[in-house]
Image 1: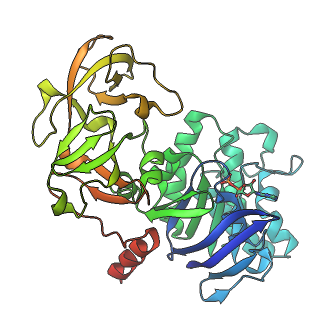
Image 2: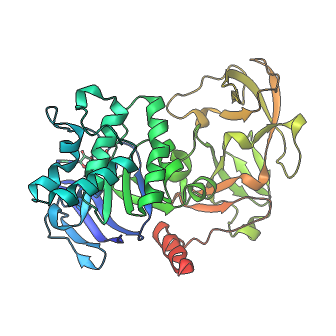
Image 3: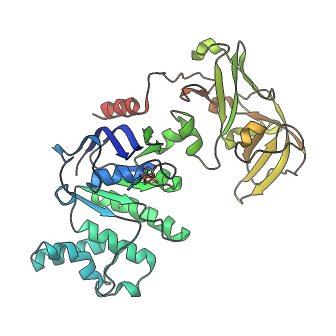
Amino acid sequence: MATITLRNIRKEYGSNVAIENMDLDIRDGEFVTLVGPSGCGKSTTIEMIAGLTKPTSGTIEIGDRDVTNLPPKDRGIAMVFQNIALFPHKDVYDNISFGLQLRKFEKEEMDRRVEEAADTVQLTGMLDRMPTEMSGGQRQRVAIARAIVREPDVFLMDEPLANLDAELRVHMRTQLQRLHNKLDTTIVYVTHDQAQAMTMSNRVAVLDGGTLKQIDPPLECYHEPANRFVAGFIGSPAMNFMTGEITTEGFSSESGSVDVEFDPSEIGVSPGQAVTLGVRPEHVIPAENATGEVTAPVETYTDVTEPMGDEIFVYLVTSRGATVDMEDPSASGQILMSVGPETPLETDEALSVVFDKTSLHLFDNQTENALVHGLAEPSRVDAATSAQTGADAEAESDD
Ligand code: ADP
């Protein structure tokens, strides 16, 4: 088991800055997922931890050792990649034990480790199978067992489930959680798939453009996103955003169709401040069903409905027949609502909706940082709370 500490890491590829001044603290035994859009620097980060890529500047520690200049083999890590490179002419036993054979392990110790690893990933009884006789999921489990037998301090996994079909991916998600519970080893996991990030991790590190935007438990990223990027990236379907400004009475949208009443001084914002209101689809409610603290009604028209079985996604527009800009649907007045399957809705109908005030978010347009989560019971987000200081505070409270 080991902590992983990245300090002031910068990585340049020629003139391209892939990672900019990243600080990252991963705790002993933690499962941390690096998530973000393609090109945000996830693979570069995990490759630097592995020692496959050297940072341009900054230091990397695993446990209490500075490993910045150590080769991968001396870092106490094992990696599992997206492409499962098994030896096609070797059976499962030889594939799993290959690294141990190279290091001339005693047969008895090798047998013990292979059997234990095969048992952990439920491949018991399959040690004499050839890879060609196995399913994609079984082959991926061989690759994981090959990493386990090395008894590493840290597992590094880069999109290990990306090549599996959807059903198997969901199955392997639960398998990986069980593996983590059993081994209690630090795991750093890279994915662009937020469903994997949300379901498996102790904490999610959200990256964008080579910078760390937030590192927090999955539900904290969902309910209290530190900035607009995280708010838009975490959650499917995505949060609705409405640009506007603070008035003496609260928030007024640029389009004029959405007003939310609150006392600006209570949440530390000033009239004239340019802000964006964020509301998740499940917090948009038909006015006639509304209970609790809600906003004034917003007049909309139902545009498109998508019945998903357990819920219905309803695309609303604030002016009838509006053309929705695919690049920025919120700007053209689209509001996405998620309602229960029993809600009867036709398309092209007038519908008055309200927002659950306790679940609204405000973001500053200049910094893009969150100003407040929940407008009914103001809980001001301290402007000084950056992604990493939030993580540090949590680390301290764990001590
Ligand atoms: P992700 O894994 O999030 O998709 P990467 O870490 O692969 O992102 O890439 C981050 C940035 O660094 C991208 O702009 C990518 O084009 C660039 N990059 C990655 N690897 C190399 C490389 N070997 N040479 C040049 N640029 C690279």
